Picture 1 (cartoon, rainbow, N blue to C red):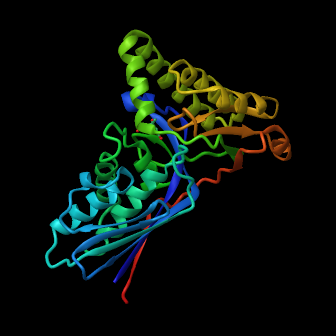
Picture 2 (cartoon, helix red, strand yellow):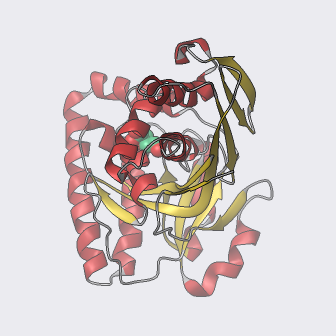
Length: 315
Ligand code: MEV
């Protein structure tokens, strides 16, 4: 039997980093996916094949014994196998069209799709159970995760985390994602923000309050079909991200270069590299290539509404 699951990547529209410290955040799943295929194997090993390489370890190996990028898969395989009997081995294959390490939810989508794919070899799970397992798996590489990324990758659509209810936005968001091509490490960026907080608890708490207020205003703007305010709030959010020092010159240059054609632009995700998102006026879409440096990639962010999906095939 073969079990195939796929999950979308994500963007954070508002609230990254502050969400780790308990504020709300607005996220959307995007139309780039990771697919995980799981099959039984005969040789008492867990084998993982991905763009990052292949590993094969004895079935009882701890996830801590493997390179960090493979840990969530070994963790999930062991967790699921341990609750079953007579499993002789597993092979897990990951195919992804989500760029890796640039804030578009590649690792969360992998955790969600792997949790669904491996567990569906044995039992039908609810989305809630898949989410719970995927967050545990993500914690093997990033213990402080807020869980927001795995949540939107599981449920899809646009959500105001921690709610999983989809936001029914009435206007078309012409969102463009531009990749700085600088890979980042979410764990390190989150630790940097923890240090900022330790050094100035009072200002950090003010920024969390400002972010909460901003998100409430964004929700109102969406209800009022007010795309201009939505854009302004993106730029306002960027100021808070600059203040907690997860921006850099490359990202600032990219944001500035898009100023004249956008309603608002900000980092999306952990920052320190990775991607920015910009809300571009319809009539300006064709001006983007001339404004961004040639070595940067960009594409339209279409919102995915399905979240994680899975199926099994008898062979
Ligand atoms: C990373 O995509 C988003 C962060 O807020 C971390 C998290 O929420 O776990 C930086």
